[in-house]
Image (cartoon, rainbow, N blue to C red; front, side, top):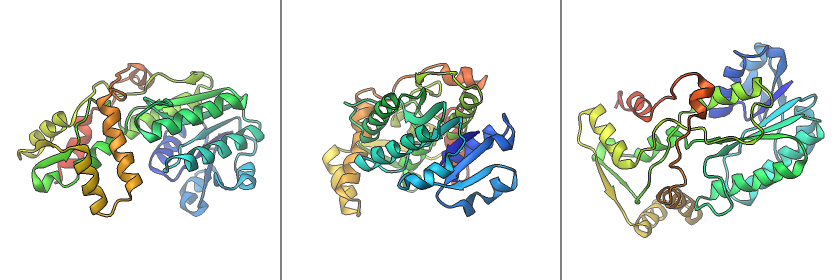
Length: 287
């Protein structure tokens, strides 16, 4: 039994869909906060159980009989994220899982300038301490984030963001395919994987050029100082902590933390990964 957490989220759902093309449905289970949202999976023979990283007893039931557990990282940052991940690891250990897998991030490290990468590093340390073989999926930076960072550029004609660096923007479907392949071939990677990235690392100057080509409108890249960007975020209602976390992405990018390009993802997929320009074309073609 392979258990996937977060199976109603964007990445977790896609992982389950791709896993079902590789293994029978009766070998797949999902742990979700709201089982009703996973009814379509249950109808296809997937075992659906309620599980929350804040409820140890619920996790014991959700993970029961697991040979492998894939922990999809939570959508929060800091100590709370690490605490929830540790609870999920403890649950997998208690369930007797042979292997624990975790959706980490390229650039994960205790000294990263990006909070999420520090959280991933702390979670990987908890995995090492668990005593159970583990695989940490060092996912490339989500291409969907590049789309969100475009913000109102299509209306204003400007991408106004802090100074950045090259980023290996990687599409969710490719990362889901890779996770499914690794789950289906248990033990393919031990410990952290190489960075699972697309074939290019691009800056927001590159993204502006792609957006210009796709839309036929001139989109320019304007750099704003970090402190000015932070003040703007806070004045628009963002909590100061959130503003600092967003700035951490750009600081990490400038330091080259997301610039690595590695062939491992292409090897797993048996094809070239989806390029960012393809993601942007799909998003912008209707704009």
